[in-house]
Image 1 (cartoon, chains in turn green, yellow):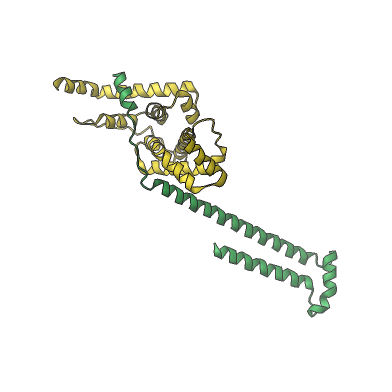
Image 2: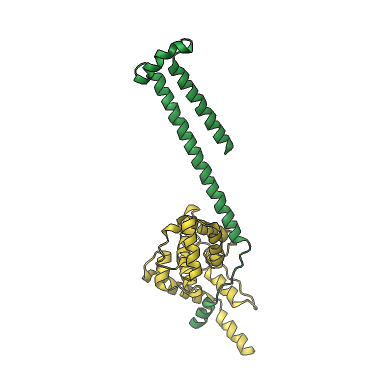
Length: 107
Length: 183
């Protein structure tokens, strides 16, 4: 009986035909890779947005206490009396919002 | 490992070549899917999902393949790990549900043994399949299942003993002998 069982167990399993299995695996793999790429792009965009926002807030908070902003404040007469620090920070924020929304919408 | 297979693996490692990877999948899909089907007690859909995950993980981790063992052995290791992960994730106890073996007069021996294999634990089923069907050595199986060789040997012998016990309980051998005698 033991030999019988061994012989039965050793009978090879059927060879399964591909039936599009490899194609399905490949498609899933490509989809996942594209998903990873999109996610990475989103993370990059969001981190750029965060960096620009922090920089803008930093500029606003320290408007008169940094050498660069001091030079900008000297130019205030050119901008109808408005502190140029606010203009630069505002422009940076608008660009950051625009780029982020465009990029996220695209994905 | 033959030259064609190693060339395909090299292409996947160096260029992340999808075409070469598809060829590797075609080459090994039958064995991986058969193994997964055995592990999943014939649940073909689940087995194909596990096989798919196996190949995708293989593509992602192919750089870790050190070529010391066979490529199919490495794939089987991934497949077994995915199966264990699936059990843990879904908190399945595959061995608790009793399997009723249905014996009819003209049942094929292959079907009978397939049913009997579902009666043993998944470790025993895996070790028996790898050893008896795919011809892997005890050492290779211990690497695939990440168990000591002694444990693998005991899984195989215990599983076979259970199958024998089950079949003798059902008087499968006697009925066959009687049939042979009648013929």
